Length: 475
Image (cartoon, rainbow, N blue to C red; front, top):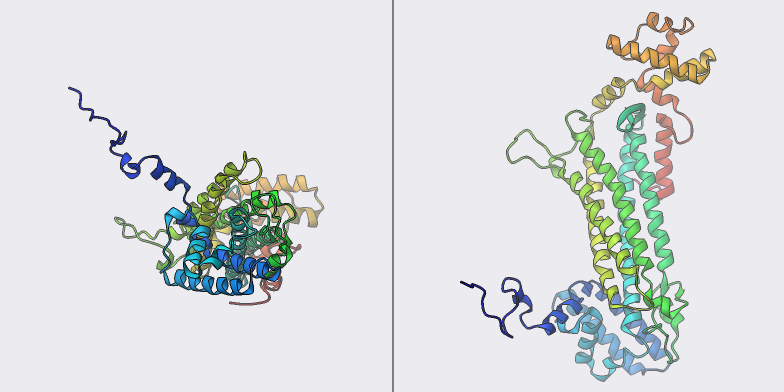
């Protein structure tokens, strides 16, 4: 027996999934075409751009001063409505620009309809979006400075506390906990630099480029650019409406910053684990297990690590949208905002979580020191001593040290505890002075080259970082 239901003009092809678009092509087009669900975030920038545009139109005589005053008052009322949550957003009007413009005409009549003279939604959205990204960069810069402040403060507190340094996640040489933390200050400072570069490059104003070719109205683009805080108007009308490099650059900078946060988050996860126990996090940044009462899971760090994928995906998403578009504007470019908005929201949250974790973590200095002592991390110090004090070629010193490490392993002792008579079997000139140089404290203190891990270096570097990146502020 055939159980397939009858098909007709009013019956969706798929009963399970067709209900949402049962009205047919019109409903589908309305759904795919509208962006008001996400671009309403641009409302402040859209109103700011419209205020600047109206002031310019009045200044050059395209609209009257009375119209400009009415527009200004109407836009102020609309801003108040949106702030209060009373604005009647309509999907049928597609986007934030048409929603605000239609509401303005409702409020002030003919004057509101004159606002769109000498502009297009193409240059309007390009301007709004640049303004939004610029504001986002300023906010993220402040957050990056805050997490850097947290790292610097902890680094200064632990400038002399040894821990194992790693390469390949294998014990390499002793460093200090403060030195390790300052590495992230350098990374985050580059993140701020990338965002600042992005801000500088995006700071040109597309308004007045119109749809793609400019306008025949006698507008003053320099006036609107200055009013909105841009350095200058964009130089080419086609590029002005087609360009999304600023969004891509923002996404790239955000993704790199998230990657840096993820690397530290990974270290937090490792350091919290039982084999390490280098640090502890409070209940504020950990969760328990539903079945294992002894567990304290570093979930905040794990989620920072995971959310990095969202930012990487956002960058790839917009690169893919833009890669095949001819000049100038295409509707594809409506897909530029969602990844940028999501990346900003995600990075903002990750920075807040990381700042909290850095301030919250408590290092276990004894556990870090034991780990630094356990992995023969001072072997290079012995090779250096043989080279400096006995004049051996470094490769020969390296060979002798390797043999001494092997002997220490056989005896189950550290290099510093290896009996002198065992050392002198390989070179009779080795003295007690060599053994004294093999503590983790001596090892770290000896690395006095600029940028090295010597505690005095780290203390100076923390102080310099405050001055260089943070204006000397402590928190």
